[in-house]
Amino acid sequence: FEKHSSSVVAMVPSSTSRAPSSPSRSRALPPQEVNVWRQVVARDWKKLQRAPPSLHADRRLVWEAQQQDYRALQYAAEELRADKEFMLQAVRHDGRALSLVAQELRLDREVVLEAVRDCGLALGSVPAHLPAGKLLRGDREIVLEAIRQDWRALDLATSELRGDRDLSLEAIAQSWQAIEFVSEELRGDREVLLAAIDQSGEALRYASETMRSDPELVRKAQERGWGVVTEGNECLVHNDDTKPAGVISPPSSGPSYEMFAFG
Image (cartoon, rainbow, N blue to C red):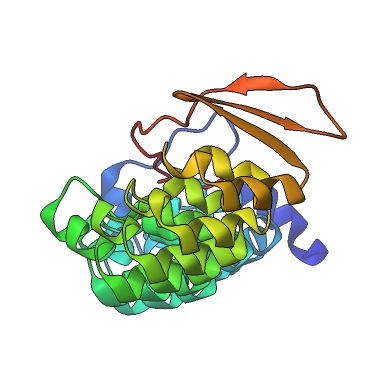
């Protein structure tokens, strides 16, 4: 790279240079200039943003950039982000890349399944407001694969699947905190609650009102270091060793969070 340092200075636009006009999109770049840009992008994927427009569609250059960081795909040409073969490889490398593919591919079952197999939270990049997106978020195989990668993916599934007992237990097996995302019906399911409480007594605060006063569940929660006393629609919860007692209202059943971008 050092051998070409003078060429880099001459060929890479300065910070005050304007982007090339549209006619330059069809201009064939000299091989030497292409090679210089390859070296520049190999050092820093962010430089792809300022490469000549024709290089934004260069499969090799974009691939090398996204291998450094999936966010490089934001600088790829639209036709490349809509290329299923290319994007399948991209999401297999990093599932978070699903957030940057063309919308039609974010609604493609094969692409989505490959993405969540790498990153469960990639499910959040599937447009839930579109009918095809709802179908994918309600696809049990996709959601199961997503949960296996990250228990938080349960919150990105349809309400029907958040009421699926086996899926909920799969998520809770990873973290008791997944109890927050299960359906209201499952918050009254003894087996589901026990699976969560067995990890942390705090899980009892997410139980249904009836189950929060269940003697067996209260005893289990106390064994996990939590003191719980039901008081109508509120429960007194405290950890005997680390903090004073405090009144904690039952959890809200408000809307779930969504995750469409990744830092």
